[in-house]
Length: 112
Length: 112
Image (cartoon, rainbow over all chains, first blue to last red; front, side, top):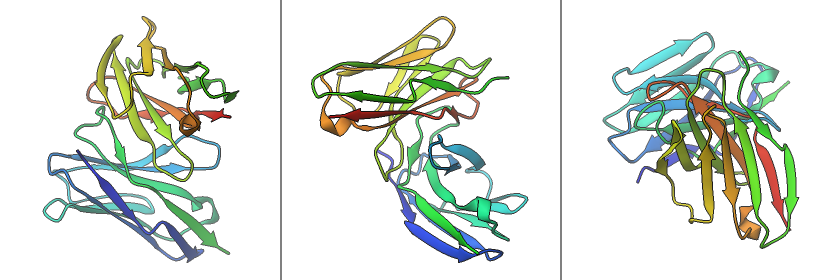
């Protein structure tokens, strides 16, 4: 079955700097890659997603890139702000409504 | 439009007992998926219900069972609770087979 690896497990960046989180997946049949942000005491919130026929997608300060050949995908957050502090999960799925396989998460700390 | 809601928010049970968790899907959504999130880990897929039928199951034993009702709300039942069942239980709903999954806030289950 699908396996998603995520790095790093913890990331600290100065406010205003960029943060990058990297993931790899194992099943070449996966074609939908969502990213979730989870704050303390809350469920995961979808922040951006990308399908396998697209190499890059951007939404304001957040961008995702996908290398389907290498089975790598990454999340880039620019101009980080204190409210970006949270746990971020990458995930892979066959389709938007199919079971989602999550990575283990990255705890992002934005330092003042 | 209301989001996904779950009840109760917290629950404490003892080993061997049975528990029922409830999820109300977002308005207009007919698909509900359940996930288990252990502390410090990513969510793991338990099963999915589509129009009241089970539509896929993860690697969980039969003592994890579920239901979906005509109004598309759902229940997760766990029998013979074990200490390792302590986790945050999340449900996610979607409009159908082509839509994104949206998560509820979760139910925190503690098994003593």
